Length: 361
Ligand SMILES: Cc1cc2nc3c(=O)[nH]c(=O)nc-3n(C[C@H](O)[C@H](O)[C@H](O)COP(=O)(O)OP(=O)(O)OC[C@H]3O[C@@H](n4cnc5c(N)ncnc54)[C@H](O)[C@@H]3O)c2cc1C
Image (cartoon, rainbow, N blue to C red; front, side, top):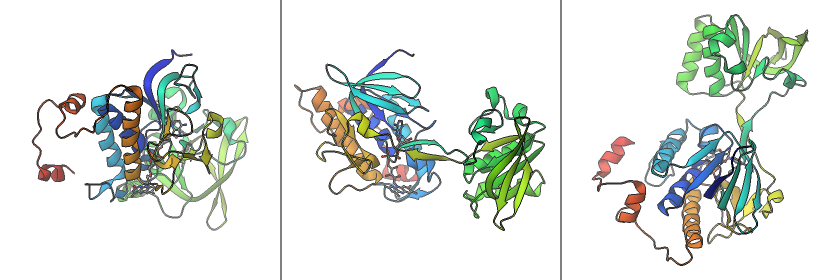
């Protein structure tokens, strides 16, 4: 068991709203830790529509969802938050004497004065293959992320008949890279249309044309095993014909889908899996436990990034007021406040013209 970590605030979720929450807390001089189920930040923007443009972020006519994540990460850099990736928050309990104790799926304990739930549509978890019994081969022949014992792709794939399955861009990229080392590589996609940008599809076509990769459009329905090893995967194609593909190794890249925690166990009031909050400060029924972004609900709620940014701003002001009950919390402008400049690490008054910003975008 690792040593408990103490922090002012724990943010659950590093989607766009959780990231902007770090920024707003930083402006108030409040430190925080972030826990994120995925191995990276961005939430839905990263997982569901990274390559698609967003047109309704104020002041930015259009930006790719992936680029928005990069910019949010850049914006929070001055506050240097600790982000724990690849773990979910499993329990959050009120501590005797105030504050909260949080335990993650990796057994990490954190204590915090306040919690902000920015869990969106839920914790993104790896989609598993839906083939009965195939789970027994996980980490021997079936891999959802890495290779055995952190072997390099070359060591793991050389001389093997490899199947890569999935409708994600990651699946196509994995198939292309696997074809460099494997004896034979087959890429199976279920949807009729390839779900990837033009450059990725072009790279796939080139690899197929070079004779390094086969593509099968169909659904994996079963497997044949021999001496406790999978020998073939069965795939039914769109003509309802079954093909049996030789398989030494299966690289499943089926993406991640969100799974909601049981927040009732945490004592939070919810309506249809959305946490009820007070729209004045976005606090839940639990003291010092806030919810922002897609996970919350209140009269008039809209699931938009812009709305989550507003919620994050008011939460930061509320927490600053609660943690400093004897100090008035004034509205300060980032343009003119020397205190905010100090927190942001701005040493001189940067003269950036509007035109420069547009060029940068
Ligand atoms: C296709 C598509 C297009 C969209 N286009 C737009 C648009 O143009 N404009 C717009 O404003 N909005 C758009 N949206 C909506 C927007 O993406 C969401 O409103 C936004 O992502 C919500 O941000 P969030 O931070 O609240 O949650 P999310 O983005 O869902 O992020 C939540 C994060 O929390 C993590 N998490 C959850 N539970 C736990 C836990 N227990 N432990 C650890 N981590 C956890 C998740 O893994 C996830 O990474 C679009 C959505 C989709 C699907």
